[in-house]
Length: 136
Length: 91
Image (tube, rainbow over all chains, first blue to last red; front, side):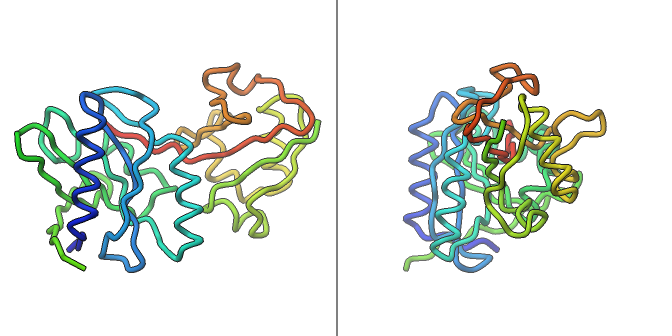
């Protein structure tokens, strides 16, 4: 289960809307493994509606988060025209050893109301976990 | 040519915990090879089986992605900063 503050949920959705029609991406971080407290918007250097690549700003953010005692919990990206479900490209990229343990959080803008879902991807296995909004 | 190489967190344990190290070379490829020579443990995350750079790694020279320069043949100057960054992407 992934707990998100309402503020964090809103920040992720706002970044996805800002990036439209391109995919938007960023990092979700927290002090504990199951609570996303901070969303860091990052540059999608692909500037594409079909793909994203985290820009160098993401790694500067990781160092800054580390200095604040926060760890990255998830890579977040938007799907502008498809469901909030990992694409085959996402699954292939999830084998990246640099992001072992990170969740994949998807923000879908397919419908008028944005949808946020969280997954753990292990090999070809995609396991969804519940996203629960909390107020601090 | 001596350059500074910034390492991602996951590689630092293979370089004595350092976030920045010095490496020698005239090109990015030579710098990467010198890095692996000094710190063999970095090879796992850095080197592809074909001898190139692993697909999950991007190499930046100062602020430029070397894929858009001359890749591993990109020349470096004394004092340049090379950054090894994870390549995180999706679709």
